[in-house]
Image (spheres, each protein chain N blue to C red):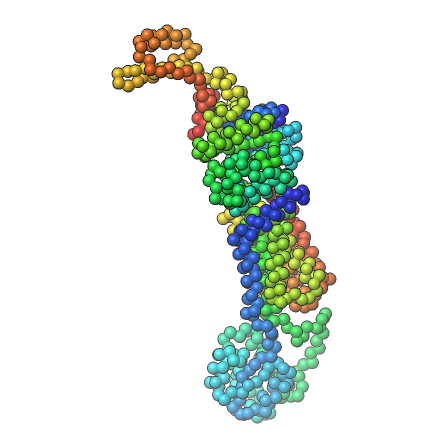
Length: 283
Length: 352
């Protein structure tokens, strides 16, 4: 296992932010940590990356206890933060060169910039970049040491759809290279599209952890959505696939001849999350 | 501590500092402030210039400058009104109005009255010493012997006649002020890194809080050394024991930098940091200011560490002291710097 969390717990004063969570991530896997704001996602990342010492439990990354061997772990991980934390008065290139120097590595900054489509802005100050470009720069920074493990905390939060899609493609490219990725998000589409497995976290606890497909099959309802002509408009009817009455009702609709479209529907992760926690991902 | 990390942070901080208006202002401001030096008097007037209106051409009074042994000079004016006007204008520190028949009254054994006209801005201490000098000189002139025999023993080097001009006394003030501005700058840079989250990004690399503090110490220390050196050059004050001066500058820079790092590590709130930093800065400036105010001697000032820095610089630059004379002052400042460094690292570790 590349990442192992055993009974990880953290509290901010009286507020229990992460409550005895345990999970593991295999090599080359993307684990999506899905939950609403304040669920404990970022606190979990901070404990896994040695930014916070767990109140209880242990975080093992690449075989090392993060609490006692943080710097050895830091040599081999990359962290992309939720908040923008670039040096605003340094250029794009200087930002990356500085972090390369911290890792004492000779890095081909130009090819890294090319990878995140920022080569044209290499000599611009970071503060002049758009939000999406800054996020791409932060992503590039997290790759500066060619890490074995990437911790991505809400990497597409607040981005426009095009920038968010660019980041997602880059995440998948890193997965292809065999990197292990711990991704936190409150975007269920993103978690569904990127993750091999998804963990639902709510009020500091993991309420479910499985592949997106299994979660949807286990907790969701498969159905058919049938659109029929009705006068000058349309009406919609949803037929659960697992009910015995559905074949008869379907035949009836088809025989009437006013079916416009039929779509199969599987449950979304959002619906599964609501079913498990009683709350929405975006409040 | 990892040398490559410290090196990388030093390089980055040097770039950042040159692009930070605050740092440039602190550098330029610290240097410009020292130019006040040239507006201050370059020498000490040790002889009081007095005006004299003598209605009866007293012989006794005419001998006063001689018997006062250089304590004052006398310029005779033609009327009491003129004397008053010239004292008010500041041409004289004070004026003496001698009544007609002054010598005769003394000879008869009576006690005549001598009027002393004093300007509005003459300190009370000066009036008292002036009155004492005049009375003593008159007594001496009238009776031929001083009222008492005073035996004086100077302990250490006799600095009589070598009074330090105000501008030379003010040099420790510029040095401490420059160091405090560097302290404020470094604290602000740390707070900015904390507030912007960049420090968090640095600390998930191989860099440790000790690396960060050491690197900022090197950059801040270099700036402090540079600024103090420029101030000493501008004020033509590179004198005294060079080793003592160098040690003083290095220890002072370490003190300023480590205190800045400690204060900067206490908060990530930029606005809040102004209070965290400016209050200690003002307190630490007090000893340097008090030195410039005559007749003020507050023992509480000795509780402020910068007192020992001011004292040491004053002794080196103005009294010819060597490292052997001021080592205890520097040791105390160095111990404070070490304590600030340890507390700063602990504070950063706790926060990040």
